[in-house]
Structures are given as structure tokens and as C-alpha cells.
Length: 166
Length: 322
Image (cartoon, rainbow over all chains, first blue to last red; front, side, top):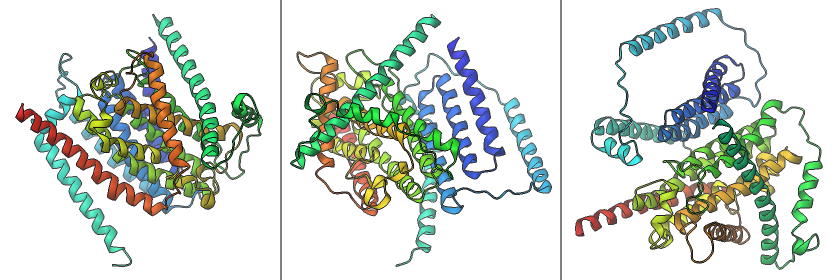
């Protein structure tokens, strides 16, 4: 009963956050709404009994990505933006078509994928996750680390070009 | 059933809030006395026995103060920020192992839960600095967040040594695993890294660069007054308590100890670490911002990685030899 009420609240919060993230005018508010939405998703993971994914969602998405977004906003735009921009109809139409296409694709994938239910008796401890990452799922795991390595090297290159002394 | 759950939530909530307030009042008093002792002063001694009621008087003053709202501030976010800083700290009490079999929720992910929620505190600090529309506040909050996200890495890595030794993150299993010997002795480097990083996470001196009063007035809470300021203050002292409590549970054997009940041992160990934290604050000068970042990235993170590596190596060697 309480869980149901909380679930409805969390689901509404997630949707509200997502809606506000794209509709508000102030960029800082957009970023904060995104955080609200991400937090809601983390709560949904808790409802699915996967606490690990929930905390990873918070540590990575809120703690790293969202903070990086906020940093970028703060370093690039004036503190409180007051200028109001007129909505550009062409731009909106273009993005609407793109978004609709993307949404249609997502919908098709969602419908055609078979969703096997996880075995509720299985081992979902952290140790099991770690073992499966380094044995059965080693290829995606290593690919992701390669991507991260490339990103790090790229960031270092970019930072060095603008360096002053060297 | 619903009723019972609800009553449980209310009782635990009330107890935690009560504890947080009393703890903060006590810690402020203790901090003043410790600093006075170190600086050869006497500190508060007049209000109440040994000056114990001094902080209560200060709290009453803070509550009765006017809540100033800067004219150019972003109203909604300005009011939201202190709550966002404070609320995650409340939930940290969910997973603290207070005594044997006394954990409100024994989550699988254990103390990682607390570390993940501190990220929301950073967002609160960011919002506080931004919404105040004050350059000192903004600079302070940027420094605070940069510092916090850097020091989170060695903080998490240092706990991994303990996790490797026990193979679990559950608070209820980490503490009994230290029945034979505290992890302080098997993981001394990890303990030092943890202590150092948790000081930086709580914005304590010598890492209190976000609030460096000689450069930034008061950092991210420059514009805050009255109870809103008190919430930041309360949050800071609660954060110190929580990180010390985690250190006590992970490295000092938690509630284990002879004769006295578990809760008493747990509090003794926690407040012992808090005393060390205060001692450090009043002994060392503040670091410079770049020195602080260099310490995190060039010293603590490599050291923590080496610690994880050596721990894993020793564990594997033991397996082979046995």
C-alpha cells in the first residue's frame, strides 16, 4: 500500500523531471530537472530490488555527468540568464520530426524484443555481478574500458593544446 | 500492517532528527573546547556546566534570527538548497550499524548507499552557491564540488581493500568480520586515505578551501542567515559524524568491544575519530586549492590503487599457498 503510493510518486517525479528538463527556459533549471528525473530512475531501480544499479545511477549520472553539465553551464553562460528567446518554428519542427523518428524506432525495438524475466532465485549479489562482468560479459566490459581510455587520451590532448607554458 | 510500518518510519525519523540535533550541539561545544585547549584558551565555560549550554543558547539565537532573502537571488533554489544539503545526510542513518543486529535497513550495498547520496549534497552546495547570486558563494561552491568529486575517488577506493578482505558490502557482515582483528591493522594505508578523503569530503580544515574565510568570506553559504545557515552547519557536523561512524565500522571493529553494550562502543569509537578530526583541524594550516587537487590526484588515488592491488595480490597468494 505505502509502496504503491511511493511508486506512483516516484514515477510522477521522474516524468515531471523529464518534462521540465526540456521545457524550462533557464539552462541551469534544465540541468537540475534532469537530475530530478535521474534520481527518479534510481528510485525505480530500488523498486526493482536492484540497489546496485540505483547507486551506480546516482554516483555516475548525478555525481559525475550531471555535475559536469552544471560545471559547463556555469563556466560558459552568465549567472542568471534573463534574455528571452523567441521560439523558432522551423527548429521546433525539425527536432520534432527527428524525435518522432527516434521514438518510433525505440517503440519498434521495445515491441519486437522478447523480454525474458530474470530468475528471482538467481544470485544478484555484487560478487556475482563482478564475476559475470569479468567472465561471460568480458567483451562488452573491455570494449567500454577501451572507449573510456580513448576519451581520457582525447581529453588530455585537448587540454594540452590550450596549455600555456609548454 | 501499514499502520505499523508508518509508526516505525515516524519513530525512527524522530529519533534520527533528535540525535542529529543533539549531536551537532555537542560537537560544536566539543570543537570549541578542543580548539581552546589547543590554543591555550579556556573556551565556553560559563553557560551551564562546563559551558555545555552555550551552543543551545547559540541555537536559540540562530532560530530567532531573521531569514534574509537576497533581492537578486533565485528564490526557489535559494530556499531549496539547505534542504538538499541536509536531507541525504538524514538517510545515511538507514545503514549505520549502531549495535549488534541494530541496522534500520541492512542493504546489500551497505555503505556505498551513503557515498552515493552524498552526491546529492554536492548538488545542494552547487545550488546554494549559484542561487545566492554572489561571486564569493559561486566560487566557494565551485571549489567545494570540484574538491568533493575528486576526493570521492580515493574515498571509495580506500574502502575497497576492506571489501576485498570480507567479500561483502553489508554493514552487518563487515563488522563481525573484524572479531579477530580490526582492519585498522591489516589496512592501515586504507584507513589513512579514508580519513584524509573524508576530511576533504566534509570540507574540514586543512581542506576547508570552499569556506576559506580569508579569501571567500564564507564560501557557498555567504548569503545564508538564521535557520537556513544553521541547516548547513548542522549538515557539516552530521557529515563528520557519519564519516567517522563509517570509519569506526569499517576499520575499528564497529560495535565490538568487551563489557559495555555495542551502542556505547560504537559511539566511543566514533567520537574518538571525531576528536582526531578536530585535532587535525586546529593543528594544520589550510592548503592551497591547487595543492589540494594535486594531493588527491597525484598522491591519494595512486596510493589507494596500489593498496587495492597489493590486497588482492596477498589474498590470491594466500589462496595458492593454502
